[in-house]
Image (tube, rainbow, N blue to C red; front, side, top):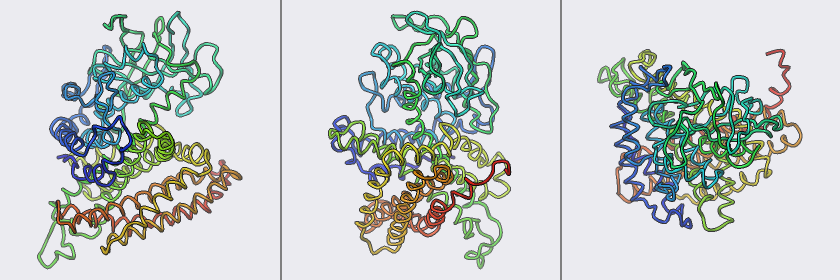
Length: 594
């Protein structure tokens, strides 16, 4: 049974980050802690009552391909209709086109509810949101008027149509071609791994497709972006003829079975009608707008599934009686939650989940400030910080998600390997998250090359200075707060030194720098997690001292922060050592030996 982590979300959103994080952003003047509480409360009910009951059904039955189209899991279409009718698809949409205009940091908290209760379902509105953002920023006024209102309402969904069989992550190799045909283009080609590329939820699907206009330059410089609707739209907004777009098959996958991953054929007959977005040959640039939003959203999927794995494992441990745990031994057999190693595994999942959640919502707040703050210099600084954090949120959080789901299986013992407990499904579902929207290696290379290298570490230095200032300002007599603060400060020093070392490598031995890119990304996430745990511990201690709220909840925060500081944050020292001295051990190995 999934339980929406509302107390944890409210603690981060309204306490750790705070509603005043968006002061100076006129667009969000109506946002408040009360608004967040209300929206999260309703989101929790929807997740628990509508989406969670379909979690197991979607895994067992899954989506089904037919010659007439994809048939989704029973119950999913009705759930999507309820999702749209409740206005969830409109949460962050531009009010000009029917959206509610809520900040991304609130949406990040809400999306955790969808991902934790039913990851396969959550992927559909996630892709629509990415398509909406690309259209809003890069589309023409006419395109916005024609497509955005219905997409924001959820009447139509959207997709990201990128890769092809021969291309994988190297989009410079795509071959789908676009032939000019008057005021539009005709597209011909096959695309693979298209999440929710075909379904029976809506009357139309708006595909955002990368293709090459005939005669375009080779490689990434010759890629353009096109709107290719499943059903053509008439001038008056009504639906017309079916476009030349077909789902040829859906993949048989390890997990997320209810989410159809489609092989799409464009132009099997006369060519799929497509409309150029923005300028020719700037498609990859535009697509990165979608991918940036998607990477934040995928990152939260990692810790959302980890949170679900924690709930399942903790409930099992509370009720599974086996053996005589040391503390409970005089009283006879007791639940396995009393075993020290079971506690260790549960604390690991919880501590990592809480760290990743806080970092993702913090990063989302930076993007809100970058989008809406009245001060241009603050917008620029927030954008640089948000850009820096996105690859960390995406890759670190999803890597932790896999580790956490695996630990969830381990807590169950042999029963975790049995499908009926649900532990295995979380492990299978979350496994994709480190792969799509750019693998962990791609995110790490982005962190080094595009983010760290671009400004020679200036954004990272500014972040670490603010982190150190936050930590130094913490004052408390609580031993857990003390442990969290000093552990985090040590981590900041290790990350700063590793960053300096890595910047030197980027200039002199790029292959050695890239060889330690993933350890550096994990180091960054681990240290920032320590910072946020220390802040959480200080806040929890203050609230305990004031006698307000749920005392057990705040004691739990202190215990988790202490565990993170003493069991997980020490990994930063090992990762820093790898970053500073381990590159040659990889870069100098002859590939023929592997």
